[in-house]
Amino acid sequence: MPENIERVRDRITRAAAQCGRSVDSVTLIAVSKSQPATAIAAASRAGVKHFGESYLKEALEKMSAVKERDITWHFIGTLQANKTRAIAENFEWVHSVDRLRIAERLSAQRPYHAPPLNVCVQVNIGGELSKGGAASEDLADLFAGMGKLPRLKLRGLMCLPPEEDEPERQRHWFAQLRERFDELNRDGAGLDTLSMGMSGDFEAAVLEGATMVRVGTAIFGPRTNTMRSA
Ligand SMILES: *Cc1c(COP(=O)(O)O)cnc(C)c1O
Image (cartoon, rainbow, N blue to C red; front, side, top):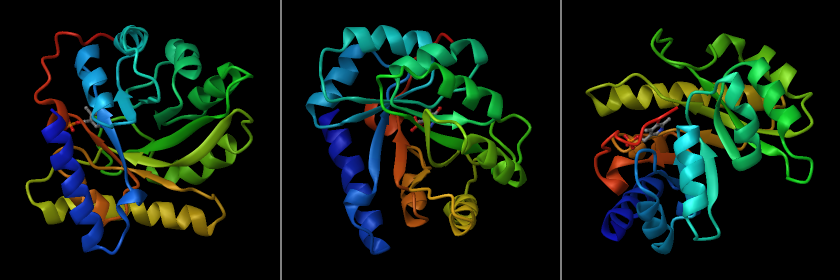
């Protein structure tokens, strides 16, 4: 697995160089959902600092099993109201906020001694019925509401675009998210994070400005799904 991490890092470096960006402008999040705690520990020893999880119960079990320090945990899965407290207490980042009610709960439940929770709003960039995420046209209202929440730090946008066979088509979705990001910043949103790109398409995402890529199978190999539990 250290070789996989090396390979993914090389590909990020090359994509960044291709568009004149520094490799330091892209944070690699290793998506460890459905992978055992031993795999997280190994990736951590190989230098990975950020880990992404989608299923709360599984994530909490692994957090208590992994002894390596210096890990930043990102929640990237579907958010349900009854899970927000544990997420606000145990993660440093949440990428999948898509409605005000969930944002309000995360802010209210963030422990007062912890720094504000970093959040990205998930955008349903392809307008797909099967996927979560806020509609692109609702972002301004959502941001206005979220801006008042004291315990959240609004960092940026995240997307899970439709799967396309052609890399050029894939890139077009990332470009759309980046355009929304630029528009919001022109209106003073002050965002610094574009969370986009997975194993199959992270280079295209970097070319369109991704600052965080979420890579699972290219690092850990296929998921078995046996550990999956909400
Ligand atoms: C599973 C998942 C990923 C990683 O997917 P891979 O194709 O394994 O790299 C990234 N982002 C989200 C939101 C995910 O659920």
